[in-house]
Length: 509
Image (cartoon, rainbow, N blue to C red; front, side, top):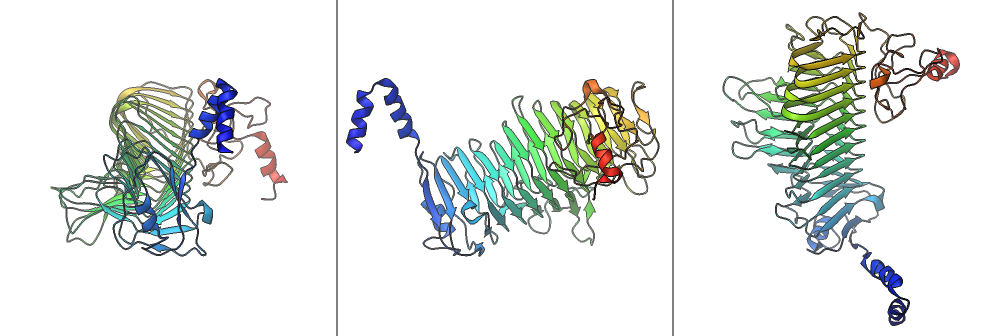
């Protein structure tokens, strides 16, 4: 039969020859099965890693054994080899747990020929590494890493006086995509009692290099950079309690969308003391750095993150970077030095459009919000449009503008402590905002804070510069006040008259 098929390809001409050639090149992956939860031996995860071959044919490690017993590793694992490797727990409905027990589960070394690595439908926990990537370490800049429907729990990367640390759970030296995944209680830590360094970033995830990074529909909870050190005159931590991205070059793009960051922080303890200093590294949730690239931060929720400059987000020394912060909700974050929500320092060309800032603060309790409870600006240019800024903490200022060309339109402030370089008659100071609701799920991937109907946020925005969608992906503008005309709302959520009708008694919830 095979001989007959070859003859037909030749006889029926060029078109069928091309079709046969294309079919021949659609090579099925080589599948290596993990058939038990043993930590070594035939059918184990360790054996599957060792069976990978340095070939161009795609290879998959898949899992099939009777129960959801946890795989515990008992030593260093074989590194990934092969051009295209996928490690996927989908056959067990994602119930595969690989406990590193102090060893890194997945490693792609520098100089590897691996072009793509996919980690999907797995839970990886308790992996550890001195340096980079406690559970997944991709040290090769030419490897594209894809993380899909994966969980990372209590993975750790360690820093010492000679070895920097990056990414408590995941480190990627090349292009990175993270989708539908979660990171909980991952850490970058000091190795030993004391290290004279704070070269440690990204409690959960770090990526460095001239490439693209995409993080979408993912959750980062209670990750941190936590260092023991006695640097001269102060106790310092690293940057990015959850995420650290350093993406130099104009072609680099970092995108974070539809994701949640809660309780992430940067902290430090001096040896011999019995207390921690919290928020002593920049970017409690994320530190995003480039010299000329682009960062798009859209439709995310940030709550209770604590950092030094930037309780939630820090953009430090970002040069001519483009920063677009759109449709985010930043609630109860704290920047100990500046920028409770966002801190821009020696930075960029930035746009803040249709964001909600609520109860963010900076500074100590004795001297609150001296440098921007909501945000701190030290930029090339800033476009500030349709933002809702509710400043509940007493004292100080909601915003701090050091220098830069700032344009403003249709923002809503709870106090007069956001002085603009030039007058903006379209923006409004309202006093307290008791009509701003608590964070809740109203559809989409992240929590939002709904303004009550009749509030000045409803239909109060700049239509010409309105974000195309809101934090839930709902198209803007909608008619929110029932006057028959659709106008853009101020803040991350776009309300509609239909919402009002349901909430006036027709909605059983």
